[in-house]
Length: 301
Image: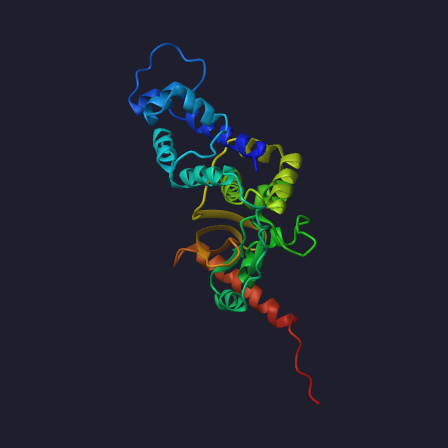
């Protein structure tokens, strides 16, 4: 099977975008004459990687099939790729290799009941599980309350699942909900970019990227930057419609799953003793009260 044109385009654009980010000074090269383009020239990357200019030019045009790991490592080092970018490059190389058979379609895997029990047992942190396409596939009550604008959004799919990327880019409410909207959106796109490299044959993922590219200029611009992210943690600032401003720490953990499915457990919590902890506790209390009010009461026989 020949290398797919889409794969060649991804390789070409990714390598060119990384090359454009590095200055000659960063790698100890003389500045020389005035440059027409930012970053390094192809021949400079070739020298740093220890390969010929012709060979690197061919690589940057997307012809990566059959390239050895040693050479990929040399190129990654020359371009100063971080761990996520290096992983993405190797994923692209793996996808470019001639397949002996038609790639198996990745199947969605249901969240096991014990994982849902775990989520429900967490009462003072918002916890949810997302897949690689950014679908929220399981959550606890506090996560649904915390992300109420997303779960109430018209971007919910036919199965009733929220999608972080669709909410970010297709619902105007997200611009107010995420205080640092641009940072959060960039992270979302970078996670999708990594997933696209890992699973190039995922039709649903391609359809999602196509939908967002068609409907959102912001997404198209960020997607074209070719930034990659695998790990997702840090500080999230939200403007919640009920309890006001929240500043929460979030951490993501990979859950073991079969069928190559990505299940990422994310937890949001507040710094102990902070105003934000008080507000998160208030939201948890409101959520618990509503749950009790909606539960059917036992009637006497």
